[in-house]
Length: 316
Image (cartoon, rainbow, N blue to C red):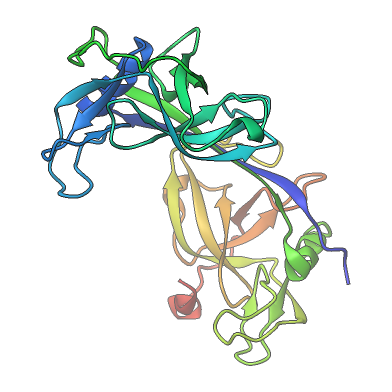
């Protein structure tokens, strides 16, 4: 049995979103060291503000300034801060109900240790030295034993309001593919596609999953499939990407579901070696490997006649 593999994996992308009038005012206010909430029809003040009442679904537009001081309602200690978290040293995640608000805001509390944090403690905003109109304009909260701050009654109107933000999304984790996929990856290093056959329905899964999702039984019989296959469905992509050699792929390009010969379902791969507008269902293709790569860079036409629809219609 091959060694079960594991490796660090990072999924990261920037998420760009536009802001409605309420969120725009809230983030612009942070830039100007003003904390704004929104008032509901029954008189509650929500911070952070939302554009629709979560209880009645009523549209909310009345902005209300609240104080930069408040009370911790609950907390959890973070002993090992991760990349891009508010503080580089251990801190507490806290929910803070700011003075004048009826809901709590989640942020970091700078404290020397968990023994210094408690529900009901008083805190205040520590502003970031440079502010751009983002939640990070609040650098963190800090303990505070003074009087409650008094909001200035700001109307929520600003020059040069923030109208959009880019929120980076990132997920770091260690991935272990398990026994079946470890064997699949090991075979790819030898430029082979190896799946596993279900002992009940006899379908060959590539990549293998260790169990048949239809029958619910374990799969152990290895079956080599391909190398050729048939395009079942495809899409044209206009977003830049890189190939296995970290070179830019010219757009537009085609990503397709490819049913390898002998496989019971299709896997996905990039199609090259043919104009994107000539790719079609039933196109016969073969893998193209680059030196040292652990998986095919792309698939190209074999020159064979197109496969008959009936031979792959169950794999769409």
